[in-house]
Length: 154
Image 1: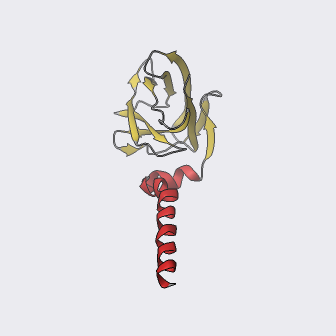
Image 2: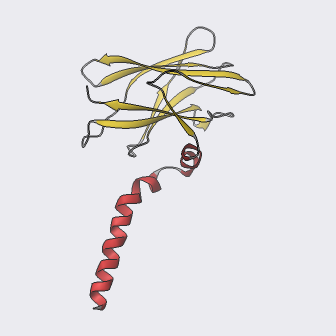
Image 3: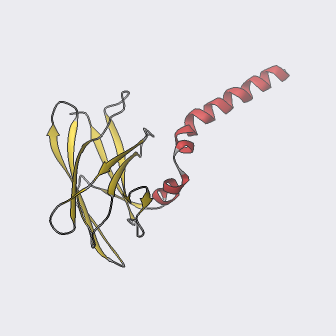
């Protein structure tokens, strides 16, 4: 009887690790802030917000499938110049790592990047979150919105 209870406890513990493991792998720095934010779907239209330094606007456009998956163009208008500006893709529906995307400065304070979002091999869609950073550090005034989009197999 004691063995059966022990065995059920071990199985329950393993199931908990499998179910909640992806959440535990995410860094708490991003998990806590992202969970409490309202989501803004970048494929539905641009997301805008204001900070002490000025207005931000971010938009995402589908460029098409060029053989390696769907390619996207990210455009970010910032209130001031940014150094080492990055957009970091993080899996929202499933943890699949972090993918830094360097932003290139265009006219004024507009930054652009093109990227292909990885897809999970077990499904045909994936929700990604985009976090804006200066190098390895979060922006001093991070976005008050959770910037997300859903990548799909075309």
